[in-house]
Length: 422
Image 1: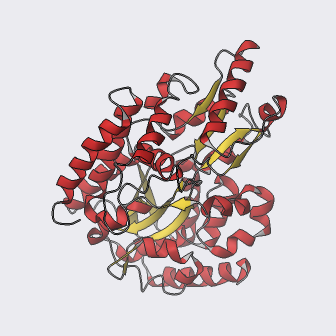
Image 2 (image 1 turned 135 degrees about the horizontal axis):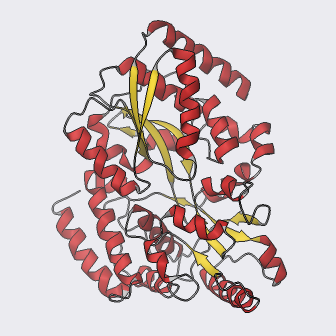
Image 3 (image 1 turned 45 degrees about the vertical axis):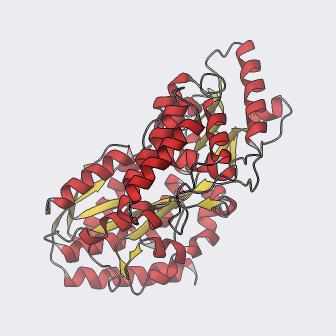
């Protein structure tokens, strides 16, 4: 189906919704990276103009861990002040009982999205959130510096280490004492689970908990991958990386003080902004692989969705807002202005998107290497599983025990958590 046809159908369905609904005052919660809240406000302004509804944004911390904790508190209390939640792809199994089933409301548009993404937001046959955009991280690299030093884009972590160290030392010798080889997300939060899952999976070390519920993390290949990452801290990465989230990593990178960065697609458009020191001098590639048996590139599957609280006092208007934010029109704007990846398949063939963000059609290669976090097998225990995992990894990165020691303790803790079953 062509994008124009998608837009026409979507706008038609939204118009029907508007005619049937009276004006409502809605509240929506959303986290922020980059200028995400500013962009969302612009979308909501148009929604208000088209529908007569008003929407207030309740900003959340940038840490997804902190967001989830607040969401769970509000929903457990039956809070009716929040109508629409912006949700991480992994939260559907944990919060499903608190959200409305959107299956019927989205029946006419659900087939436009990637089936796997719809499946990820479907719990016990209920579609509990609509996709807004999807996510998979990549390796950002400085094209100018690799060319200057005659280096290829690394395809293994060993190659990244060597190239990062050589260029970092060379640039420092020429006067840039702030140059680092590699920045990533090393803080103790959900972002570290994403980074570390990639290290482990890329070294043939499994998915922490496998799809059948087996706890697999305590193995030599996983330990070797995490020990390798610990060796980056204070060498090719600053000691401060232990407190970095996405924005701290991007800050160092965008100032021109890193050779490589691991980050999500949103950083691409910002890196080419007018205020960026590296605009036009970087590109992206799939994340490197390890050297263990079964080594491969691995990118943690991310993405954000919109869900409607079952406690909303304006459910029809809230559903209308969810449909709007997941629509082809809004996803196209997000892709062009934010470099967020659409969940609507036809948009990957959209010429306007390709012209504005040529990287987006190419991001399919990154998606081919995507790996889900173990939220499906661990169900409502996922948040604690992730917390235990990132805690063990952060201890290792901080020099508090080897990966083998910390993963052995982690395995015991996960077995206790699992009990007779997830």
